[in-house]
Image 1 (spheres, rainbow, N blue to C red):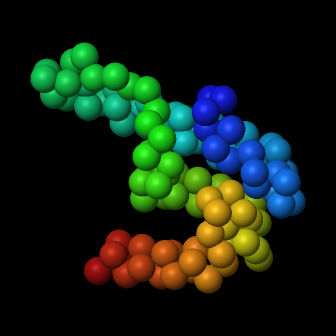
Image 2 (tube, rainbow, N blue to C red; image 1 turned 30 degrees about the horizontal axis):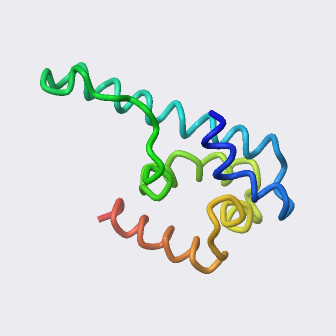
Length: 107
């Protein structure tokens, strides 16, 4: 999990609690381990798939979808600010992404 913490640790310098960073990292790790392991079991050609977390996974929408519910629940009034600190986005960028996400899932 150290790669994940290294990627997100900048957020603690900007006021995000270290426990929140650790929780987000753990959620991301579990999400991708589950997904990669599921692929290995479902698709025989992927039986030897490396289940290591990849740097580009940080920018995957699945990563956002994995950590955003935590911040929405813990910080209902300013979740976008807290999530933005973690992922390096402004509140406006987080809100725009969330609006597009809602449009996509609520067709």
